[in-house]
Image (cartoon, rainbow, N blue to C red; front, side):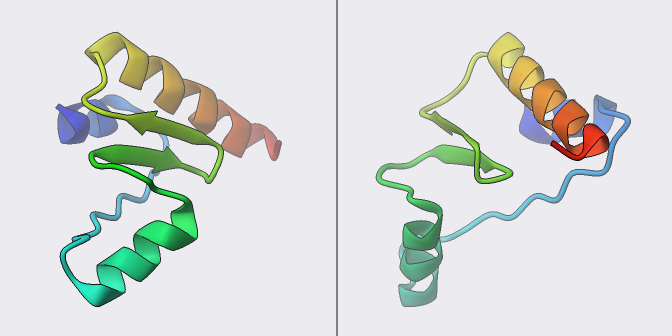
Length: 72
């Protein structure tokens, strides 16, 4: 679902998947403030913990994409 939605947004968005089972992955997740999985962090502002509903994910990605364009 995430990749499908990202493909429909007309703005470039970087996606990073982190394996928290590795030592480097745990450190990376900690740097993002992730406390549980799955978690989606967008521009270090928005965090969605758990499996988001499709409309929630589209809304958050759209808002963050617009923030990025406006330089906010």
